[in-house]
Length: 183
Image (cartoon, rainbow, N blue to C red; front, top):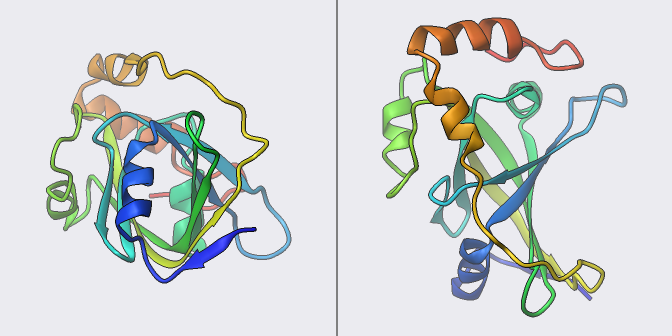
């Protein structure tokens, strides 16, 4: 049976920090459109800012659904699963916002990450005001061994200049798959 917690406390904080991957879920308003679920990872890209506030670095990618959905309605859920050790799933439900690399306040948000990896290709900082913290058993989540982080995201973007990234956002990240504006 799952439990609802009043905040991200010490034990939950430790569990979340130990997970090398987490999942982000968002959806557009209304009954139409696509629900999006994205895996995220890389050491240094996620930070717990308080008992009801977390943030992560959002790198340029093939889609920009999360930013579009947050601009549309703000709803977001983050999920962390134990793939080793005791089974556990933690979900953080809340209201998210994004601050793009081009917006005022980006440098302040980026400064909240104590040890980020290369930030050249970060397109936004996503911040979540957590409204509900819960866990569940995770009994059916498989046991898997973590081998290493992939460096492909950072190396692929390292070849792009700042101007290339502006073009990337304008051509590949201008709208969600449902046509919602992103930037």
